[in-house]
Length: 153
Image (cartoon, rainbow, N blue to C red):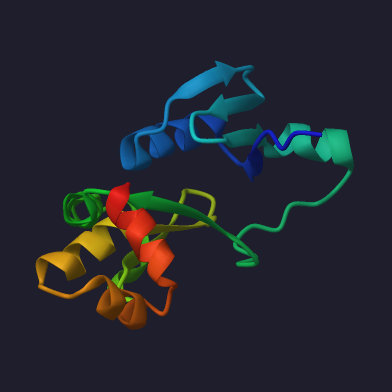
């Protein structure tokens, strides 16, 4: 068995495709008018077709999951996001206890998206501040071998 993608139910397929392209840079790989497959392992399904196929009701903004992305150019992404007045930001740029900066926001249907600074970038930032690999591992609460792998990547 092979996992293919995560599928979100959306009210307006074209609006959601445009959002994911503009905000996250994803591309539409397949567009079947009621279903679209985007780059990065994300698929979108119209609410009407989802109800028809499953008989299930859709509960938007249930806040039981989030889509997680990492960005190498985090500061540029955060500035771009702030400039997009149509995006509902939940958490502005916020450092986590392990040093990674994140931002959380919603897509047009209220699905939560988190974009974090790439872990490699976090390690490089700490290394550029003069921290040793051991100090970075302690600061981030990860094994030394993880820091070494991040710094190699």
